[in-house]
Length: 390
Figure 1: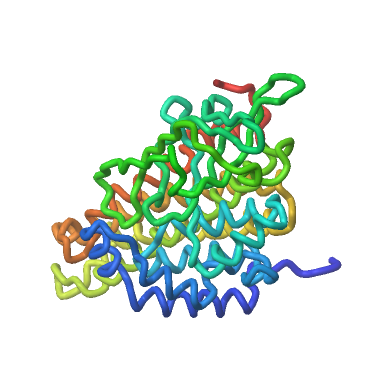
Figure 2: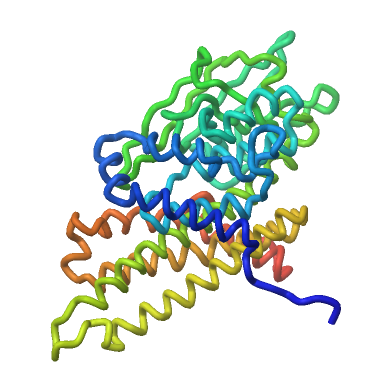
């Protein structure tokens, strides 16, 4: 053997986790639920996390970030979730938008956008999903055409997170090739105050400070430099953001699962009903909680592996691992919340504990940002070589 394999995180990331956990624990689930009830965002937590450098750990140092990788940002995301105050905007703003602009943005786009993303002073949303396209990015109908020195953007998007707190939206559209007439993917930076851009909030049953929106873009005029990077690299740019999205979604779910499991275990250690022994002494509760612990650690390992592949520049390997991590994390997230409710009994649905509200939120993990069925399609085709089913 020429070297040793280790599953230990770097010392810097261990310290980062501890620092983020300490910050997030000062806010916690009560803060998150209060903000959700007000219809407000977690601006105080976001601002403090940005000032401490936690939101920009994956942004290059030359633009005010920490110079780390997606694995570092995923660690921040997981610790926020474990403390009961996760936010989808970490997936969207520094992970997707920060990564795309870092890798493909023009020098001016990097200078103007990345420092704000790193500090949290700037928030960007990401818009790909459309009402009639769903998970099929090839059916996107949002298009941009050249008009002199400007782009004119038209289209609709749906289930776009955080537009109410965003300064700009990274919109996935299509442009026509002047030579062939074919439509190809392209990404545009659209400031939210641009004329012709309208956002309408979608009412959701999920109790969350992160809100969802429909977007309407009617003859939205953008300067030439609104187009991100090279127009011929649109698909590469898009997928450069989707792998980090899946890794961050996995970290979101494992953090969520940790939070629910911690509550269940704490309750099971203290709740006494039969023979002066805590209910956690009974295998009927102990074994399901142990199973969740095992599945959660497996999901965390796969998330760690996916981040390693991505940060090493292995986009193909990262794609497979990121999809598997997202699938595994979503499944254990749902199971963890469900078992936590079962462990607490009636208290599992009491507002005091907040688990009832987590049922719907955890279920979201199975359908966004990509459904488990589409992940299974990916693994069946890409990993197993089976025929395409759709």
